Image 1 (cartoon, one colour):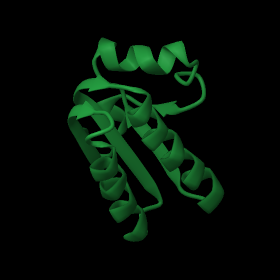
Image 2 (cartoon, one colour; image 1 turned 90 degrees about the vertical axis):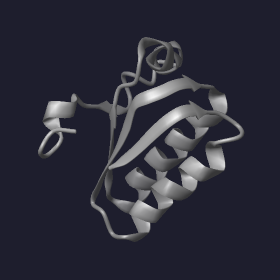
Image 3 (cartoon, helix red, strand yellow; image 1 turned 120 degrees about the horizontal axis):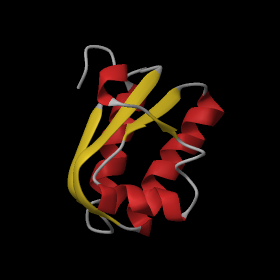
Image 4 (cartoon, one colour; image 1 turned 180 degrees about the vertical axis):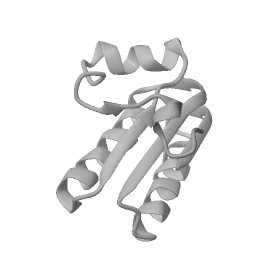
Length: 97
């Protein structure tokens, strides 16, 4: 699981991407991005998540997301990505989150 907090924008995108890739290289078959502690996400943050999703599809692992606050989730809805990406509830993640 990768917990993202604060703002996922241009200044934080590289750090978020590195955290996701670190879990990928550890051989995880499922990665859960917990977005509940994000206060803000822009298109750069969305690009980080979409790139991880593309790698997951290409390399055969699964990416799931725990939705963030309404202001963050709105970005996914506006791009219709709430229908394409795998959003899960915290209780659906092994052991809860």
